[in-house]
Image (cartoon, rainbow, N blue to C red):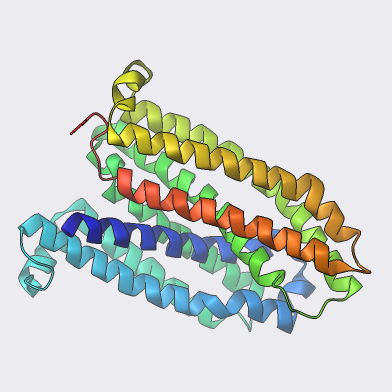
Length: 308
């Protein structure tokens, strides 16, 4: 029951923090300054951020409490103030939690300022969200790696997660912008198609970073010589499932880039069909991304070679 609670909180934190960082990054590379200040577009992208930040603070506290309970061997409701403070003061994961909490408080302040200064506030929100996301590297396999290799492992994990956040945040942003039932104009279709084109370049860079850091992470955790041994473990099987889902996301992203985006750009007169096709594709891509986060939250707590 404790493991299920910890995995669930890890998944929720991964998804929440990635949305904060990714949604904040999106207007910085995909929209012009005028589009960032546009009331309709701005509100769509800004509205979720404050709630995401506040929920992340709550999740982070709950995760720390659940981890304290697991370490102490007691129920989640049985921990006291002394246990919690000892965990925060005396462990690396506690130090990471403090950094995360501080970063999320900065993110809350930036989210409150988004409507007044969208570009600067989004940049601060992206930086704070990325910092909060990076602290999760102190609660997985990277946390168990010692010395200089441990710092390399954690930095590699952080870069991996931030690149994934930019990708997943863009999917969320497009789902908000391309929502069915919204009034469409030729100008708005042009903005949507152009922002999809803008993301194509950023998305390619994200994929390259995710692939490279994933290979580094696998080498540190498993090692090329131990791939067959790990493949027989639940960790290896879940990792294989993650790789299949990642491949599926690449196929969907390619279809978005080369088939659906041109159709959307050319569909100004009758946009409904192109919009529906793009929205469906983005929903599938988002579902695959969330499934990957669930797998990562799960196998991040498993021994790579344990077969029991």
